[in-house]
Length: 265
Image (cartoon, rainbow, N blue to C red):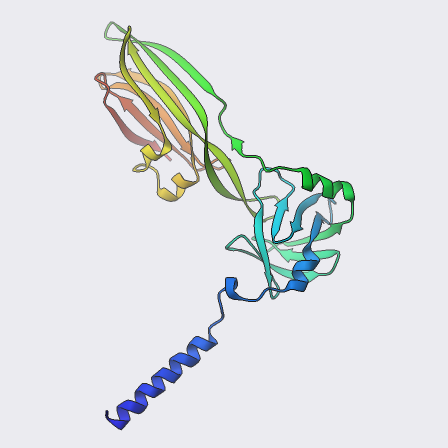
């Protein structure tokens, strides 16, 4: 091998090696501060309101809001990591004080509670999974072209879970979990059944972006009109407790063929 080329290759290898060594390790691989983590153990109250906000226990944080799911936490350097992505820069930490910047950059001040009753509340609290729509049934009779039709809609909560990331009142990102719905629709002309089907949110994947659909529930279905094309129903696919909502025209023809059209979002 040419000596000049040999020295160039060796030089490149050394540069790449030094660059790799100089790269910071991913947070998951960095050694966490055990002392800081130990100081965080316990129930923390907001300084101004003196209301309990969260409890650090072991590797997990539990929130006073029973609808927020527990999350894992780590302390690396001067940063508190909750979940996989969320980080909060610690401004001050002692045995009984904790100050950090929330997602909006606002300084949040907490103090540790020694109240046994407050601690017991956290110990006994169980996280709730929310249901957006109660079991709901609608019967509608419509007439078209001298014919009488009977429409049945049933909205049924399921055990399928939908996770949604949200910011709580303290500027901390939390995960709330909801039960999705299945909606059943039947259409009869007299005693003849023209249509019968269960609808799930996945059936609207072509109309709702995947990122929105993942955090959404199939919220509602309402009859709107009947015309020469068939029966029209407004279907809403919504992110719970959020403005993100897709309204879809679910149409069923007189011979039982369904089709969809996006109305608004």
